Length: 520
Image 1 (tube, one colour):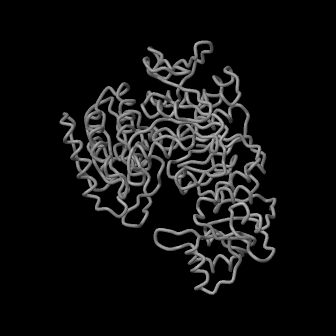
Image 2 (image 1 turned 45 degrees about the horizontal axis):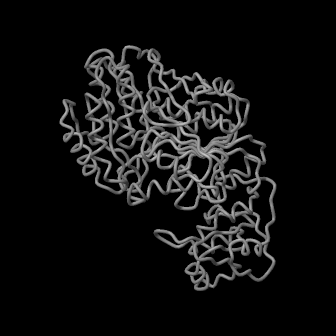
Image 3 (image 1 turned 120 degrees about the vertical axis):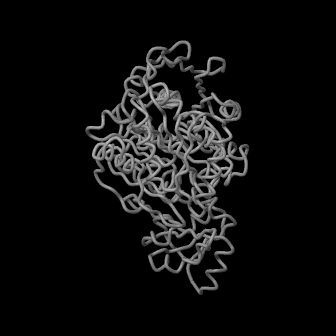
């Protein structure tokens, strides 16, 4: 990754302030107009981020209602409050005499309000929205990298970071809240960026975070089990994703139809759809055919036009991600020849099949860090590494706490089915007992009934060191895959986030082999 030229502490806002009468906001959301002539110049749901002229959105929360913090918001400069009936009651109880806009579900109108206040309804940015269980981040980086190669200045919003041109900051969540999202889009337009590429999570779609944005191109990668703790079932999860492919949210779509969900989506979408497959027996507009001699190379053809492309990242799934990026550019008007050239750029995706090495470690095991945290992603990552692993393949794996419990055993099974050495350890246990999570993953690995060697290691740093050491002792050609956390630089345990970076731990383990010897 390139150097960070500058960074922002809180979400930036456009320098040119638009004055929107509060009465116009009320009319937009169908609420009674408050008395007075208040004018709004910004909107936020974070009382600590309020600036003078803001509309403070006081939403009901899991632990407290946002109206509880309205006093602090008003002290910070908020001129009005957007809330529900419960919030209005709390304002009355607190004796807070502030203009208010009261609606039944304030979260559902935030996108429209933020779009009006920040003027993003007619912003000139070309926008790309990418959704799916696996591949969102990589595909977003591929599109952004290709646009940059074509001479465009881009913004990027996703799991790893938020970029405005050369300005970067670590992301808090995959898709920001609607108030922050529209502020970011307004800043990008104000700074004359050409495009914004962003990941669109199912949570964001369900929670109205992307309301008010109509993407020029929406991309679907795939769907597999994840986030069922939030959605309740695969059908509900799919329908949350499918909401992106309507005229209210996108103008055209690129859909991978390799899985059944993609095929259903292609028929369900109510915007023009371009389909892609890498399967020989699945009908699609464009077909990806891998080169038999070069695992990175492939062709992409619709029968009349053929693109010859290469994936900068290993694995079948990354060829699909590259093809999706290419099609996103094609359907947005770029010529095939320039797409071929642009897609050759290295996207440099943090924590996605990221090789980790140390100087002088050429004789040591190959090590890769990846964000794979679903059964399908774990299997795909290990399958991608197997053909170029002539020795043992080791994996360090865990599962996140307070998240979809149903996928833990399946992740363990995937690890045991595709690796020779399996080190089950802690991921982000959050509020759960780490041993209980590991037990579920281990049981899945045992149920696979393979010859894989299984290890239960409490501390993640120790698991990484043991995996690297064991791979080294096993002989030449070994590979170690550390999966689950990818780009993350912290580990959440019992409400506290401790500094932790898989890549740094891998480097320490490799360096120890150099300084301490083969049996260190």
